[in-house]
Length: 469
Image (cartoon, rainbow, N blue to C red; front, top):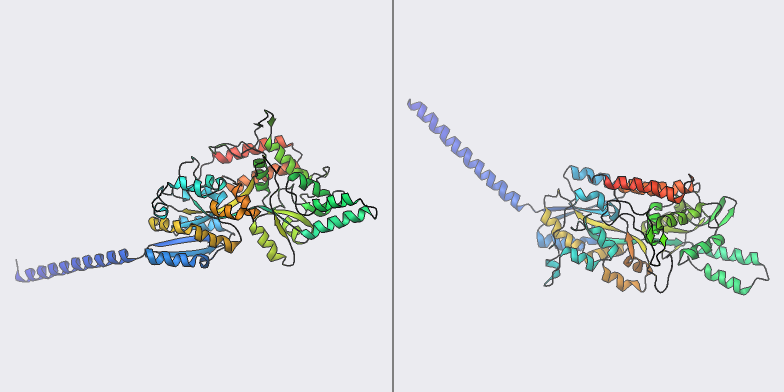
């Protein structure tokens, strides 16, 4: 071999060795840099800034070395924005969703580990499945489980309950109008009875029906002042939820216990052995408020939006959640209105109250690159102190049973949550549309409640059979 060739090969060998060494050094540096990069947990939350949990975030970041990236979102387009972001693997890692979305989002949740709370429980750990039954009311706990009832897929943060909001000025006006109609020789006993009746929204649905003629101002089918917004599908907030709630109050579930078929249209047998049809009773009761031939007539599908009517002083009572109440307070700042509990079918000894609730569920998504960090943060994030701060800031409630029980004596809305039903839905938008169509079919299209329910049950069965994607 020529001497010059040996020199060239030697130089090339040394160069190759240097390149290899540099590559190894660079790889080690990259590895060290990657290992020193703190895990990031991206949290999406509706209508709340990080301020409300800022101390928790700071403490967790300091103790764990993780970074919590907290993003406030708004309702408008929230679901679609999250689905697009998740598809791009850009988070959220912890996603806050309404309870009635849970069944639609199973593919975007992980099963939470059964030992998730072990470190937070000290020396007496219980499984996560046992813990949710101990910590939360039954109406919340049952929606935290998957369709098989085996795995916990979410933990709750804040919870709200539907209530009646009412305008006391319209109740007072209705009493004054009655007293004037009675004239000078009015019977004092009758006046006092009506005064008691119109002191506040009825505690039972029967009392609500009694209040309707006094609170309603109508001329034939034309209504200038309504007692309560019930009976139509499209100009009442949460009309689908209210109908489902009435079915629950009458003693029937919406879907079967295994969540595979509709049951709201089926009869049940009372303790006395009598066959009753809760779905038909609920749908008939709801739609009577828009039936011009009914003594309960006070609302119809051609009337303006119920929130607008309430704000303008043309509606005495409205079933609402805290979001709706807050919207009214913002849009109509001079309007005075109060909360009242949801009416029951009956009250007193032997009666079991049922109420309607909705809560925010916190899920960990399967695309998170830092799953353990997300799970570690989920525990204090949904802990008692954290959710109490979030609930207080929003004017809603903590889901913890012990806290609700402590509040219940002085706060009837807190008491409602203990007996609340959180609605299960699949394909939630279409699910609601199916119940709204049942209302339209009876109130506007002339179908009987039985036929409307049969038709509606077919649509719900179709939705329950669709794959969760």
